[in-house]
Length: 575
Image (cartoon, rainbow, N blue to C red; front, side, top):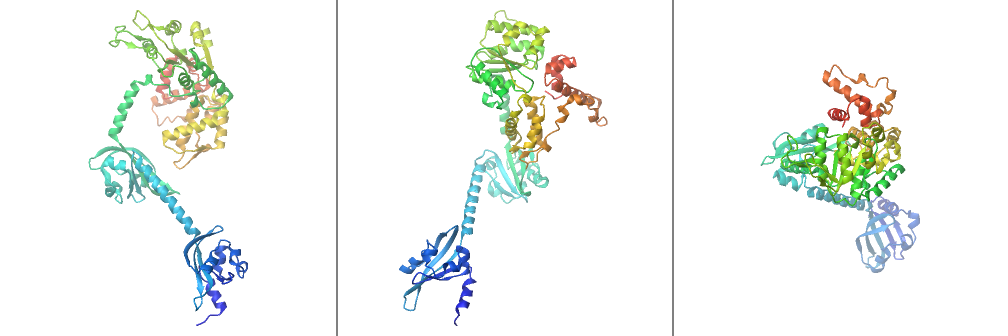
């Protein structure tokens, strides 16, 4: 059987592989359609040309010269990777009369192989991470069959991969219902459910969350915590709470977020004050960060290694405040502890004592505080001999001290002793340019606390926040962003205006027709006591807004004592 050149050309063009033939003069004589597609040259550009001129990196002419075949060789032509076989063409007398290359495009195969390699590396990395964590982790697929556990899971439950993988999600449960199954049914996370697992019926807390990829449920991942370990940590926490007033300051000036001129000026003054032993008075509205500044000043001072004792003068009942501040000796009064008790001034010896809400001290306690500032010694209740103390005093207030001095509520000589280095902390409405930085900081903080992955806040959202007057300052901003993050779905990564709680209610309280929106009350659903508490809560919110967070002014406006005011705040959940 013989074929004409036209038939042979059709046969060659119908093949998937590229075919290129050269004669003994290195001239290309055959270049099929597949070769055109793979190499990106037309047959008119290649045929009847020397092969080295049209394909510079070819080796076909070398095969022609030495007669040695080259099989399964990779070659790069432009952006295309080919796999080629090059062999000489022999006549009936075993003489080389040409050479042929048969090749195919393997670029897609190479890319796919690279992707597979990357996927395998990623899978290995994820397995290494899961296996190295101390938390017990279990993963099931969308049908509830186990597909992964880590060594911590085996250590906690006593079950191995052979016991769990491919088995139902209930296989490890000794007592309780499968949280994995509930998560797969509801597509919602479930947190801290007590149950018993494994042959030894280990008491654990289980948290599970759905695995959703492109809106498709792929399975559930669970984290198991040993209850006995939690009990141990709780005991350690309780012991730590007993030593809470001996903790070092937690914050530095690096933790104060913002670049506004007003804030930078306050920080600069605070840094200069930190290097001196002088008494510092931190002034500013509630929520501006006065305690943060106190921490930072102590941390920057030469007393940084000493104790940092914090006392909220308004939060301690007046009947106890004197004994808490100055201490007492055994038998000083009925109920006094055997051996007496050190006061906060003695506890802070060699360190710093931070007195918050300093304006709430009674005139009697003010006199004793003045003695300490003047004489550097404290006289415990019932003692006859003063005790020397070396304490740096930092104080804070949101009250108008000058007004209190005029009214005789604050001793003038104490005012001058406290007001040695006054530092005014700017309100948030005075430094609105700091809101974007503060928002990002707060989002990172709540991501850790809430276990979320929010990465951004939209510009439209920031514009709304920058228009608001912030009577509660940074503390209120934290509250608003925290509520916004709770409003986000688990898959949402950016805060938008629809996620924010309504701000206009607090924006202009004076524009309300009534200071108390009675339309919010559901009288049919609430008892008289609940209605009264709701009314009081709304009243206190309105008054605090009108006084821009100044609790002393709010108490005066309501004509109640500051201590009654604080007790009400705590009872109503506003403090």
